[in-house]
Figure 1: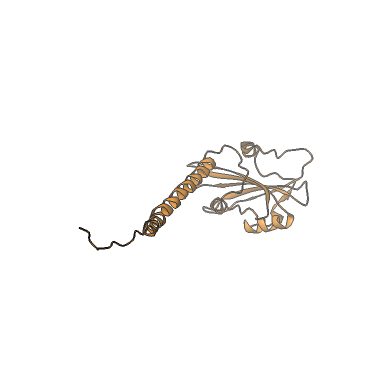
Figure 2: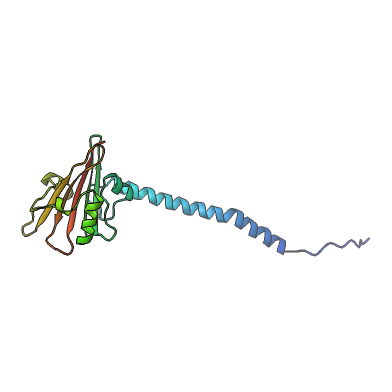
Length: 180
């Protein structure tokens, strides 16, 4: 007894199509999820490292910190380092960088002052504050200019000292202190 009912031929392309759909709907979003998790983990480690720092970190301070402490580091500055210390009574950020005379003038404008506020042969950062981050602002043969920008309210006070020994590329030291 044979029947003439013919079955359609087997079509393996259908299985490949289903496999492709499964990969696109499940594997790709899963891959993005794994990648996102690794990026998030790396971000947390950077923040943890910054919070655990006990000395200058040789990198540009975060934009948020620059705004909070009113220390807008010029974009073209080099040899940038910073350290941030927070407590209930006060928060302090130390920043150092090297820049040009033109950018130094622009920096002083950005903090609300000008170059005339920097007095010749004056170091305005205390030895105690300088020692906290390893700065030596009493080196023989170096020329310094300094000024203090005291601001009202919740704005931070800035102690700025500039090493003008190398006239074309002065080194700027800033200690910004805010009391919440």
